[in-house]
Length: 401
Figure 1 (cartoon, rainbow, N blue to C red):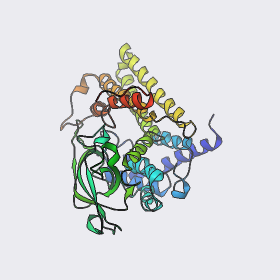
Figure 2: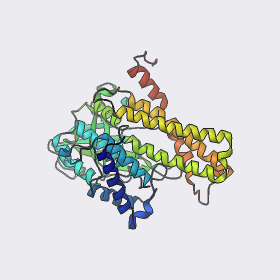
Figure 3: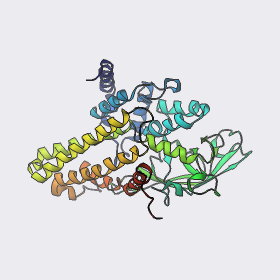
Figure 4: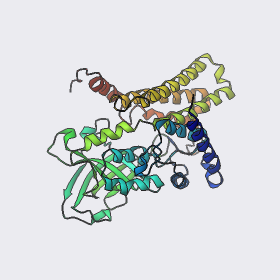
């Protein structure tokens, strides 16, 4: 049974959302998300600032760093109510859910004081520069290079670096929301002589500077959530490195570990909303009377519950008691499930789902189907996830190289 303080918090979240998803923000209901990140971007940025102003960003961050220090159960409640209210997909989630926790784990006091307030206020947007054309699931193969030039204190960063600047050259790909981001946290090779993961560093790089080019990638949906990012002698201040030089692999693994923490409930509530839309279509057009489709709908509902309770069990364990492969197991749960939901959505819609509207206008079922084709590839392919679980989690022999 929920504790009284949890019920009170739920009421606060519901009340705030009801009072604020009005006026100019009312048209944002249900906007954004996978395949729809192009929708209402300036308005959703303004919504991000409203969230920040009223203290709804960084709920679990320590109070000493500007957060509210709330337990994970309260954070889950926020994600649940946020999705139920139909609030827009967050444009600041990469900063809040990835970069922020990374700085809390590995950043200096100066870095936390400098970067966390902008994330908390919803005024500073981040993107993640990890994957490359030849280093997607295999991050240790990163080839983007960064070289520290001491005494170079101005350059493109717009601030005195103190001790020089990093000069970056290389390419990143599948960079979510790069065209809107102010900063990017970049995994780069800073020691070319070191092998694989031993020579990597995590750098904080301003996006709006000479030497940074963003090229949006048009997807099957016709939209561009992802981009290619090219660094041509781009600059980052010497002090804007997370951890020590060569510590990038440890930092990157820390980021990937938090990527599927409490924030997965936000993702799951989005899945819930998509599932409910498919179910509503099946009821309205009679597809639910088809035994095969009805069975698949039930299986989709069961999959949602499995993901939810797996995440609850993981978060409820004592600190330090979570195996290092939990994030990989999570990916193997949600990616195939989401793909099957996309397939179910078009099958429920019937023949109409095979035809796009004028100008390649897609409905929600078509967009869901096309977007989810990539689910088992991005964020580390499912084949790689299984290898990691086998080798690191179960101690099985490594796959022949």
